[in-house]
Image (cartoon, rainbow, N blue to C red; front, side, top):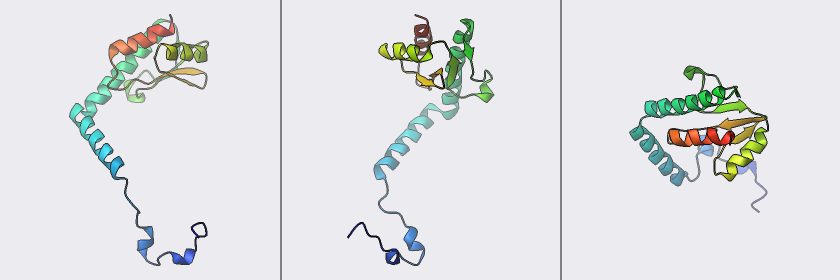
Length: 130
């Protein structure tokens, strides 16, 4: 009976904590991802992501939007959250244009990453006001 586990069937030594089958597919994918990121450069990834989030902050603030994400690069990552009236409706409008943002705590959340282009970032922010 597979559903009635008897605790006395476990080993008494440290072998009781050995793993079962390792996630070889996951390990291979993680290895490939780390290799790709390493080729691009971790510092370059950070620099590019922070530049993109800075563009979003600047574009929103110029239009009078309250940005709740820290402005200083050393205090923020790539995510930019902004308090915009009708944020949930705007999120849905952007999704219809295939622009993916999130609605969190009544705010719009942009999350560019190093592979996002400046053109895509500008298009996304401008679409908020279309």
